[in-house]
Amino acid sequence: MQLALFIIVAIFTIGGALGVVATRNVVHAALFLLLSLLGAAGAYLLLFAEFLALVQVLIYGGAIIIVVLFAVMLTRSSEYPRITDNRQWPLALLTAAALSGVLGAAFWLAPEVVAEPQAPEFTELAASLFTKWALPFEIASLVLLVALIGAIIIARAQNVDTPTDASSDGEG
Amino acid sequence: MSFLISVAWSALGLAVMFAVLSVVVLSMVWLERKALGRLQLRYGPTRTGKFGLLQPVADAIKLIVKEDIIPNDSEKAIFWVAPVIVVVSAFVIWVTIPGGDSVVIKHLPLGLFYIIAFAVIGILGLVLAGWGSANKYGIMGGLRSAAQLISYEIPVVLVAAAVAILAQSLDMREIVAAQSAYPYLVVLPLGLVIFFIAGLAEVGRTPFDIYHAESEVVGGPFVEYSGAHWSVFFLAEYINTFAIAALTALLFLGGWGGPALPDVVWFLFKTYAVVLVVFWVRGTFPRLRIDQLMAFAWKVMVPLSFYTVIIAAVYRFYDLPWWSLTILSLAGLAAAGWIIYRRMTAPARRVIQIQERLAAQRGAAPSPRT
Image (cartoon, rainbow over all chains, first blue to last red; front, side):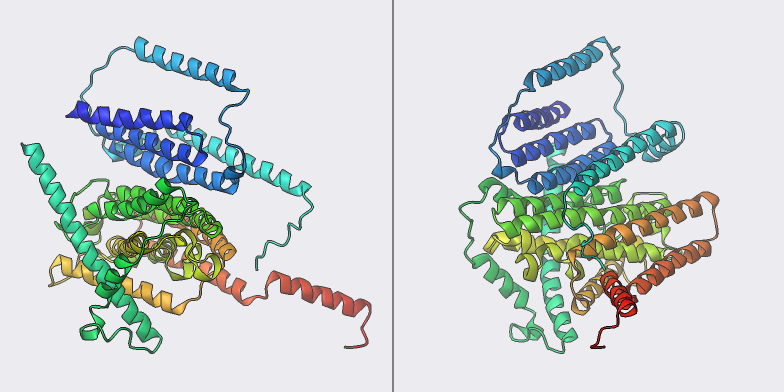
């Protein structure tokens, strides 16, 4: 039962991931990514990590895919030729090989732990996140904040160069 | 064998949920037409059945029988899958929204979080519907829906978090049980206001129906949809409106708690009362402009919802008496209301600029005309 569900989830995750790199349409790629991320949420669910699965659905399945689609729709990707490869592919191959090497090594070298999967009480999760792991939690939010501000600064710098009237923002 | 039985029970539960929600949607369509009619000094439907009660049935038959047109240039797969995503996300959250102490299909300990997580998926369907239609108004509507719904999702999530802090649980049953002494309306009026307004924006009801505004984007994401496909979006919109009303009742109005009557009756009474307020708002307020909408989300709703979370956390941490939270909450509401009032009654920025320019001209060289 457990195994059958896991195989279904794995097919979703891996099939979605293959779809992301194989399709030529950016919007289809985003949808395949959604499939893959929801598959990962299913895997969390099989490990009884219900809270993590819901976070995966909310953050990745909802917010991030919608923002990706938003960006794709704003850039009018259909007007550009649908090229899916460029000169950076050797570099991409190298990165992918290195990542899978590291992950594979970690998987093989790690001591085998066979623990009974159990649902962590979500109040315990919150308590450890805000007491024991408060510093990494804050650092992660700080990194996100820096990325946010950086994105705004880059966008503003481009706006200043264009001579369009920036003050007519139609407010008031 | 036991597995098969549990699957059969789940299927039966889902079928019952589908039937009940269909009846709810029919009742809401009738109620909306009647309520809007009364607000506009009309009778509303009167010809089909007693009090026009069969009007929604006639509407439904008309919608299903109409021709279903699929545009040639559309992305067929995405055009098909978008309404499915919207309606599935609308139905799937009802699995754990309780209508009474034991009236629920599947009781989940993380119920509130589950509802919020799966409600977000519905936005994806709207964006895809706009993109798949191969229509510029569809794309504009899709972009608008993405921007609007993501922005208003933040206050909804934060206020739900504040309620979870007060109840110390994400379990809908425990949240309602925690309100047995007094509903959270009493201690967190600010939260109720934010949740209701942001909830209206989430389901795209009238002051916030900008992404499918007929006069601006001719229906937005739904512009190319017709017949049965369109009716699926329609169904999802009403189910989501009912869900927001039900959540408002569960989180702030004490859920199914109430004297004498059975719990389901109290739940339906409170939920339909909130639904009537939604229709009342629709009949009263004009539509906002898109920039006003976004400014309102990020400059008013998001800061206020952060304030709500902070006061709820401080109240819970220092174990303050309950009336202190009421005072803090009302103070936040009054401050926000006062700032908006000042802003709305003051002349617009552009008017001030023109007035200053005219005053400067008059001071420098008085024109002969004046």
